[in-house]
Length: 124
Image 1 (spheres, helix red, strand yellow):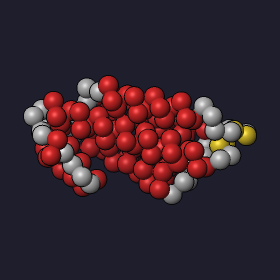
Image 2 (cartoon, rainbow, N blue to C red):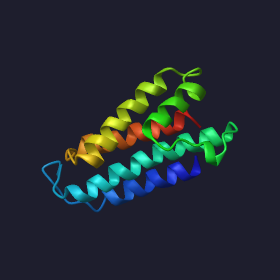
Image 3 (cartoon, helix red, strand yellow):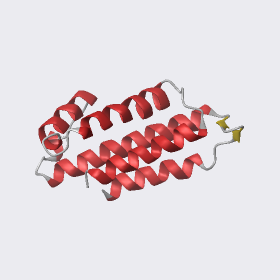
Image 4 (cartoon, rainbow, N blue to C red):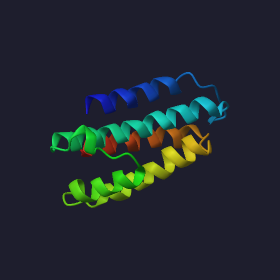
């Protein structure tokens, strides 16, 4: 999970440089980048887990649906909650944070990064 944690740490470092007023990030573009990087950390963690289980680089998922299928196949057997956590992180980090740029509350963004770390730690 070394690479996944590197991505997540990069996201946290980027967040330190975003201006804040009244517990609100005032520049959304870097927050979107932070959310995108944190979501990539989640995907990297899944990739690392899958390759450790014998999945070749060529077979790694190329879409969100592909990640869902691999999670069902390789991880849901051990922990059914992981799929729900992945879905929450997908909606929060990728859709709301990165794609739509809806996350501006400091606590929400920081909690999202913590949730990504918890997910990564669970699949080590």
